[in-house]
Length: 631
Ligand code: AMP
Image 1 (cartoon, rainbow, N blue to C red):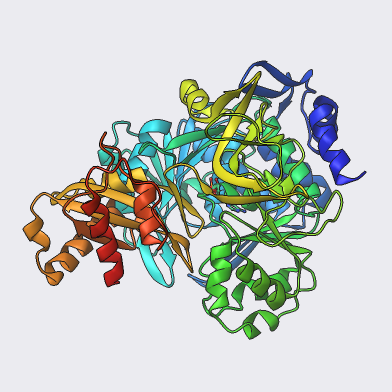
Image 2: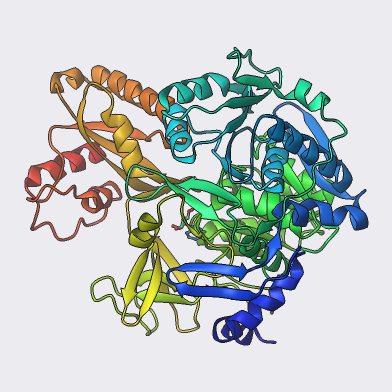
């Protein structure tokens, strides 16, 4: 079948299409309805069916491939490599499940996972879905204030964490950040389960903190059966940034997610049982959930969990793993490739990469020079794919597993099956049907299986944030600009909201502004994303001080800038630290008091700031221009 027919059928004969895909997973009880869209925009997939994510990822493979590799942990930070077969993974996950049960976790409870890239993090995720509890993984790079807001929203019964992570050989202590976060949060978890890696001393809170190793010892022979849950039972929440300062808990179901991932492994990621998948992301991000943990395991593949940098001990490390474990599909981000690009390509070419069917890249725009460089350096096909935390799996790509097709530089490809992608005119709200017209990328409801069900405990926010009516229909907004060329290929042109993308990490400028504003010297601040050759974008802050004399000399300004960056590091984490904090006496605003972020951004990028007729004080933008000129 041609890809065009495959896609068309997924939309026009939706239920039959997805009923076929649903055979890729195990069901404990068959579903009675494929899609219930009687209450738009809420879609229920595989209604009446019962299944379990952990069963599909682990248990069902034990009989047929129990001795085969399932989880391959490689840490160049602590120089360790541990391989777990499906049978071993099955045993470990049951131990962790027994531990969580002992700590009081019940089906429907939340377990917050704040962990470095270690196997216990994967065991904890799978243990949660095994017993019907929801995990809420928080990226280890986030600090206490970010973590506290997520603790308060998820209200976890138990938090699973560790003494420390390590980055570039430097120990990053987690426990003090976690203790501070719990102190800041209104909600207090009953128990904190701690993996002691021996990297950083930990103080235990009596009655609350429990050590992982001794508890595991007591559950070595644990047998914890999977809890069969409704297909619509939430499997996890994952926080992501939007326009407001408060992160949104993206809530995912069970059956729809399992089917969507199983289908994507086949049609997009060219995966087959017994093969090896390597995603270089972090479990704290959606790519880690879908394509380090669940997708590959559901497909019966081994998955590599890598703790470390792409260039340490040298730039050959990832590629040596491809050779050693005969990786067939690899998934990374353009930023990582741009880091490698600064190294000698000989490091990549030293290894036999012939097992690799393709390198998949996502998370941020893939620029042409980066795509060309990596394609040449590794001599394997490169496949861009565009999606979001909200969707959980690709919206746009080339589905080479259905019908191989050429890629176009700068384009992630065409709409993936299941997604009825539209471009909407920002001003009229009408659908744009012609070629090469710029609009907001939108998806007509229902969203396909695997996408977000709602915002955790906030249906109204889900509806109001994402859904717009176009005549007679409801569409989901991605908050990305895009165009479609005459051949149907899409090009993504950046966010329509205040979200920025730093090295593939999605950050809300409002969150960074709130953190900077908490510094006692700061009266007001604007944060914008500015194009950066390595990270794609960086955050740039312009602050007005309560007392401008605090930054009177360049030395004072530099000192204060350092202090403000430290505040952001401590509250949100170094990932959110702005590249620069510059001081101005007034911020560019409209007469009605709205910050002119797009104008600030344009000036920072050396572009024309556009229509400025509504600006309150033109000298404000001039100050930004002068500061940029000084660089
Ligand atoms: P996240 O939710 O962290 O995955 O970030 C999603 C956002 O990253 C999207 O809304 C896009 O702005 C951007 N993005 C992800 N993948 C791509 C891609 N392949 N090309 C361009 N932008 C992308």
